[in-house]
Length: 179
Ligand SMILES: [Zn+2]
Image 1 (cartoon, rainbow, N blue to C red):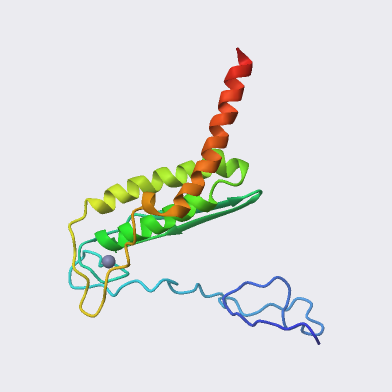
Image 2 (spheres, helix red, strand yellow):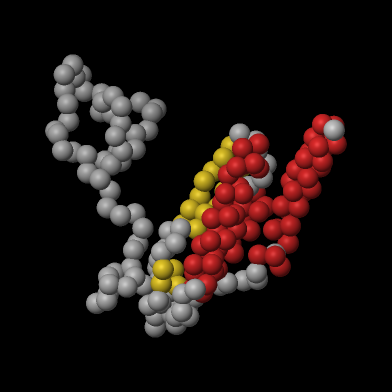
């Protein structure tokens, strides 16, 4: 009575959500599972095969995945955003997601040692790839994503100095006590 149902037809539900009486052996019609169509609003293909920027519709776009990472104690979240993006929008997303990783990605053991360094390195390569694209004006009626300031001019990025200093101190202690 008091249990609300969410009849989401694309979510496989264990058990019979409709609680049919005597439902022993009852199965919904086969083929009722329909894969959801592409969740992202990918830009409509143009006459050319070249992809357009999904943010501004700019014509010179590349598709390089951009990552971010959140690691706090045992909670880890791996985030990524696929293109295609033009040079300006790709740079904006790299800056935003890299700053997020620099601020929130250090606070668990595996995140500190493995996942966040990997994320930052990945974004460095993505940034280099996007910066090699030719500048592209946005489609009519659209604008580029706000690039904002470079990562190293964002105060949140400097939160990374805390785990960095701590890691240096730990390495120093290990070296100092092993000799
Ligand atoms: Zn763009």
